[in-house]
Amino acid sequence: MQTLISNTDGFFERLITMGLLSLNELDRAINQATTDDVPLVRYLCQQGLVDEKHLAQAISQELAIELFDLDQHTPTDRSVSLIDRDLFCEHLVLPLFIRDNQLFIATPDPFETTIWDQLRFNMQMPIVPVVVEYSKIIGMRAKWLNNKVQALSDSLNIRPEEYAVKEDTASFTLTEEQNLDSEAPIVRFLNRMISAAIEAKASDIHFEPYDKHFRVRFRIDGILRDIFSPPSSWSSRIASRIKIMADLDITERRIPQDGRIRVSPDGLNLVDLRVNTLPLQFGEKIVMRVLDASITTLGIDELGYEDDQRIAYLTLLNKPQGMILVTGPTGSGKTVSLYTGLGILNTDERNISTAEDPVEINISGINQTQINPKAGYDFPTAMRAFLRQDPDVIMVGEIRDLETAEIAVKAAQTGHLVLSTLHTNSSTETLNRLLNMGLSTFNVATSVSLIIAQRLARKLCTNCRHTIGKLPAEVLGEEGLTDIGIDPEKFTLFQAVGCDQCVQGYSGRVGIYETLVITPEISSIILSGGSATDILYSAQQQGFRTMRTSALRKVVSGIISMEEANRITTN
Figure 1: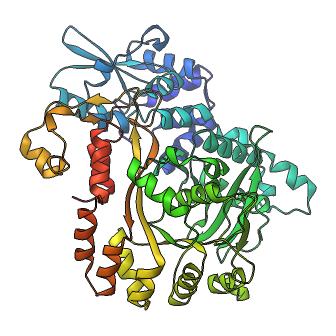
Figure 2: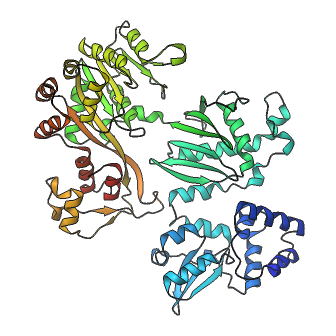
Figure 3: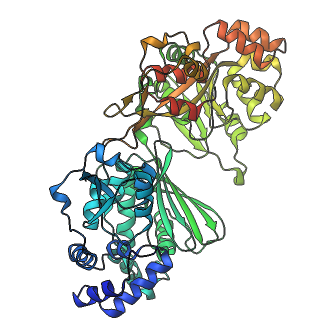
């Protein structure tokens, strides 16, 4: 635990004298805070062991520091910007104002000395701490610290004692009714976590056990964010409850398990969660994938395709045969692009069959099957069955091997439209990947009609994005902005800022694409054994844009930041 600003004996005595804690309660709190490496004041507030207002009064009296009511003051962006953001994020402080050349800083815990030394060093001016109530500074800091994520975490307002479970119920079984009742607090906790994740539009929920702590993280806009840190003692109970919800074996902790949960947070709409458990050293990590059924109804205009890219996709979707491949790493939005295409094709006149691993979202009107390799039901087996089912459109979750590729080619060459994915970094690399699998140049050149390579980028929040001053020409050149045919004097660059309507300056995501149409010219290059460089040059002569160029065009349009373009693409 961090060193205190002065001798704490008097403070401890004051807590007991004021009746805030008994001697035994104080001893237990000190020991546990030390074990958890959490400052005592923060531990007392987080656990709800004392009244925050009286605790702030006790600190003020003991240290002769002013007690400040945050309800009577609203810090400004200028005051918050006075200190380094890393210090602001790391420590529970809030700059208020400068008076008489002194910076007044609010804190619920002036005993933490590290921050004062760092602030004096960085600011080169006197620092005056004032004491405030813990919950008030938490709520007020949410506007500047992590924006929506911090506000979400604070809004949960979870206290461990609300979810306490008697020690004799640690062995959770379905056959003991009293144990089910005793686990109700954990049920409430998980319900709140799932509801919060859906409200925050998180794609995944991570429950992670460690030696001395347990954490919950949400993946929001593709980035994992810390949301809550329950006591480590909750780990096994949380795992057991999730397994019950997902119809998994609660006695099996040695191997991973997969399951599915359907919940209705608002009592109206159903949301599916895909669950995977993974045995770790200190328990089981559980990840819930939030399956958003609304992606099946997204229009193609919402995905971020530029006009020519959208026209190419729609044109080749409406061809009666051929193969459309969507490529990119995990989490790049391939499923959304495929489901959007299937939604466009899903009419009464077409027979559509999909083989998926697993089936993530059920789509009415489409015949979806989930492969089961353990039972001998793999992608090739499913596709051979499809071809005997009078199909018009076939979607196979991923082309992983030569056998799957050969059946897909056969289907595309015999009057069927085939959609699938590969894990490659660019559209031109996809052609090499198919050839390296063992397909002939003839089969690749005559079956593949379109390759879409994609990434997902975080969109700038239009409420708070801030313009960047004119950058030197050499900087623009290094980033590639002068190579995309746009006059640098005619566009404005924006950077992320952060407000209460976004997450650190970003809100939502948009697709970044490169669409490679296999034209007769490119088919000829493939048949003649041309390299990826030859194919790229020919495609660019016909208007093809690389992923980097597509990202830069969205930078120029003010949709994403230069930092985000650099994060997802290389120059």
